[in-house]
Every structure is written in structure tokens, then in C-alpha cells.
Image (cartoon, rainbow, N blue to C red):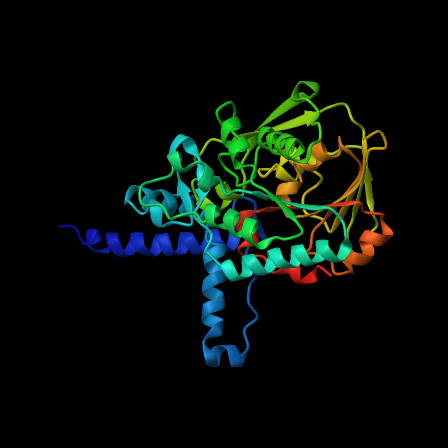
Length: 374
């Protein structure tokens, strides 16, 4: 055997090591992963104390893992390897039938859930305003026929029952039957995201109007424009990057609203549309609705029949709000994750006449920001 063959394996090993190091050093710096929708670990500053307690090594390992050359490809390979080896039902995001990516059940925290509902109830009682609660069910609880074998149990049934038994002032509406019926016509949930589709949001709005004795604007009044290429948050967190993208639909009734977005310490942004088309160029197109998460959003439609509605909400409300604006002259969307003022004072200052709490069930199992509702 020729002598050079003795050096083949060590040579290939060294080549791979040095090629990987070169790729790591030469790749352009990246602070944010658009696919995973998260900021990547920054290069740590090493101190003697960190070297002594071992945290320096841990921080460097996180940094190297986040900036490894070809990381996105390896994340995808790892996800599909787990799928092929039968670990689908153990993951945080299920690869379901019909190319649906569905979040596993949120851990049950009934105490936190009940505490949040009691705060909603107390606030409504103190304000003296009519108030309703609309909880958007988790997609997994509604689409069980798509889930893999061995999936976790979704707690939505218990949550709706608890809401019915806990709330005294706030009226709770279970709109799941309407969503289930509508899903036979068109999908009410995105395949790559946890939110309702625009069609699902319209069905939620229409069902709520019926429950409240109001008239919803007919769906036939809307011009629907579709945009392909939407890859939502479940797609980003799953690693199943070969999953076909979704389609986002914008429902336009011809209404020209005045939308004012306010965040603390910033100049208000004023627009004449519910939709912010710049976000249609991104993988996650959902912020096209009202520009995504903000502290306070005001929507004005002077021609609407009703008065002023305050929606205390999470992101599920963003795509529902354009429909609500058909019925109310003014709709305020308030996000307690960012608002730190007195909500009671806001109600007085803005002449709020009605309250709507609109949240996903998964949010109510984890979010603690109802403590700011005073």
C-alpha cells in the first residue's frame, strides 16, 4: 500500500476542520435568523470570573451553535431526522397531515388562567362597561384529525368550561362550533402559523356579531386579494423548511380607515389602511395586518353604527380588527405586554363604551400581563 494512503484520513479530517473554520470566519455576520424568527447569540465578552465559573465556555458554545456555517440546513436536517425516527409526537411542533405544522399543547396552568380571567372580570365590573371574552382555540384542538399518533392532549375544553364557571361580569362566547363548521368550506387556520386565516377571522367576527345580536357585514362585500409565500412562526420554529408556504388573503370592503399606531417614546404612525404591504416581502407576512405588535392602535371609521370599543388582546386580534371596524366608529387595540399606564384612565379619557378581551387560549395559559390591568 502506498504511503500517502496512511495520510488520507488525517488529511481529510484536517481539511474539514480548517474549511469549517474558514467558512465560519469568512461568512458575513448575522444578528437575526429570519427563518427561526429570533436574534442569534452575540459573541460573549470573556472575563476571568467567567473562565473560573465555566460560563465563558457555555456562552461560546451557544455562540458557535448559532453561527455555525450552514446552520439553517442542519436545523432542517435534524428536524426531518427526528421525524423519520418516530419522534414527531414528542416535539414542540408536530408535522401533521396535509402539511400542517401544529404547536403541541401548551402546559396546563389552570391557576394562572383563572387568575387572568378574574382580573378581566374585576376590571369590567369596576369600569361598569359591557364586556365580552372571545378565546381563539388552539389549532391542535380544532384539527385533531390531522395530528400524529401519540400527540399530547389539548386543554381547550377545560379552559372554556372554566371560563364559563369563573366569569361573573364578562360574557364568554364559545365560537368553536362556528369555526368548525366554516373549516369545512375553507381552512380557518394557517398550515405554517398558529393564527386564524383571514377567512377564519371573518367567521369568528360574524359568529360574535350573531351572538351579540349585531349584523356582520356580508362576506360578499369584500374584495379578496391573495399573496403566496407566507411562512409563519410554527414554520420558523419547526425546522421543517421544505413545507410549502401558505397564502395570506386581505379582505377589503372599500373602507378607508384612519389607523394611528402609538408606542411609548415614539411619534405616532398614521395610516389610511389596515394593511402594511411592506411585510408581504417577508417570510412571515402576518404583520401585514396593522403592522404587527404595538402598544396601542386606534382605528377610526366615522360611518360605523356603533360607538367606541376597547379590545384588550394578543396578536390574534390584528386580523380580526379590520372586521370589527365595520361596526364601531372607534376601535382601540391595547396590548398589555407593552402598556404600562392606567387602563381605567384610558377608558375614561377615550370615552370607551364597550370592552372585548380577545386572546388565544395558549396565551392565557402563559401570559402574566393581566396584572397591569388597573
